[in-house]
Every structure is written in C-alpha cells, then in structure tokens.
Length: 54
Image (cartoon, rainbow, N blue to C red; front, side, top):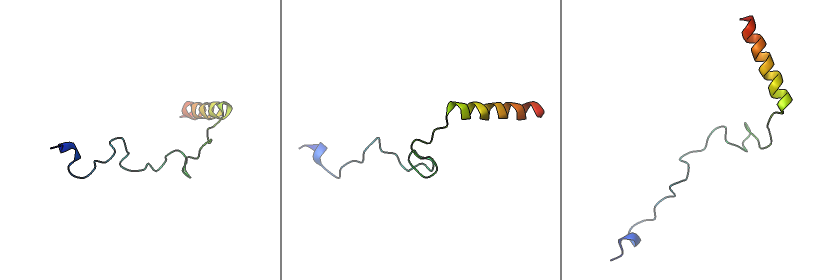
C-alpha cells in the first residue's frame, strides 16, 4: 500500500500564515517608494541635531 497517497493533501510549507500590514506593494509601503540618499542624509542630520539639543 502506498501510504503517501492516503488522506488529504498537505498545505504548502513555505506559505506565510498571514499577511503583514506593511508588506511591499500595499498602500502603506508601495513599490518604488524608496527615499533618495539625499533625503536619508537630511533626515539623519536632523535626528543628530535633535539629539544634540537634548
């Protein structure tokens, strides 16, 4: 008897159990929504200045 053919099929093992709220391609995190290097640098400088003032 071929026991591998008995019963229901098994679910995919690599499938995620749920969707993330900030997954790529969603409204919160659209594709191509990356910040430029200049924007990131400006943000880092602003955060450093705010940290210095504290």
